[in-house]
Amino acid sequence: MDVVPVSLAGRSYDVTIKRGCVLDDFAHGASEYFESYRAKGAVKARKVPVVADTNTHLIFKAALEQSLASEGLAPDWFVVEPGEGAKSWAVLEQLTDWLLELGITRSDHVIALGGGVVGDLTGFACAVLKRGCEFIQIPTTLLAQVDSSVGGKTAINTRAGKNLIGAFHQPAAVFIDPMVLDTLPDREMRAGYAEVIKYALLGDAVFFDWLSDNGTKVLAREPDALAHAIATSIRAKAAIVAEDERETTGVRALLNLGHTFGHALEAETGFSDRLLHGEAVATGMVLAAQYSARRGDISQEDAKRASTAIGDAGLPANVASLGITCSGSALADHMRHDKKMEGGTLPFLLLKGIGQAYLARDVELADIAEFLGEQLGAQ
Ligand code: ADP
Ligand code: ZN
Figure 1 (spheres, rainbow, N blue to C red):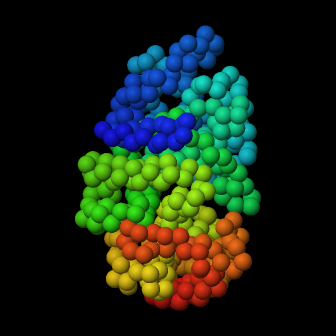
Figure 2: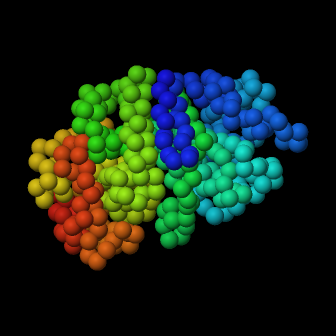
Figure 3: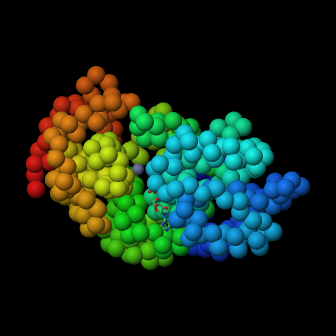
């Protein structure tokens, strides 16, 4: 078992990574968070609010019910449709109304059981409910396990874009059971793996080499390899978040490696199933590596190594093969509205080497447009 502390001033919490910590003995491991439910004499006494989507509800209902029953508790379910649509004002309103009807107090812990969508929605609901109540993350996708469940970013989407309404609100605890990934579709598994490669590329060359040798095992969900990949990723994320909780010093920005390019690709494909977030980030990291090589920050060989790692994982390494028909400048235009844009330049996460990301502040968007044009034309 690994317990990774996320050390934040006045608000530290543990990430538990252990096979079975959710499916076998969640109620036992999380027992301390259920005190308030045990103490209540209300109608809903001994009922623990759990937010899930229809898939995670169906798959994990029995296991969670059984586990909570061992502590004399039962889940009270709030189930949303799978997909980004659940991160909306409408669903947020239903969820907060439901929680208020239950009589949730600030010391009660709400459980988020699902991928990034359920985690972001539940986290944001808990951030605003009575000016902040507690929540516990049980991430069930690889992406949520290695990235979105830790760090306290919560949000919903609006017409103007993704994650534009949100808050920093840290969970009280995160329970990661690699076993829950057994049912995750392979495509979602690969998409989450892109974020694992991200930690290696941005700051850990040793991990990059390890992934080159063991990536297939991670994707095949071999217990030891999977646990190592998750724990290494979480340790990296915890260290970055502890240093820069609210993305004010530039350290947390490192986590955006591949994301500015990736966001443009997601926008161009309409944030649809055509290109999952992790897939867009994968291609985005290859583009960041290639652009770094183009300006002479890294060798072509290193750029090739990054692209091979991504291609070998079955992720889209070549932007030209995505079937995007727009021009380089149309793609770059999606970056123009980025919050960080200043004058004609945009701070960009680039590579000085494998395992050495840095924030370049001199990147002209016009040059990015030209580069993207070259890449879109290259087969
Ligand atoms: P992400 O974590 O990548 O943001 P989502 O929350 O959108 O992703 O989840 C991706 C999809 O995977 C959803 O359809 C969700 O219901 C499904 N899902 C989540 N966890 C599991 C699991 N452990 N097994 C099977 N499907 C899952
Ligand atoms: Zn991401």
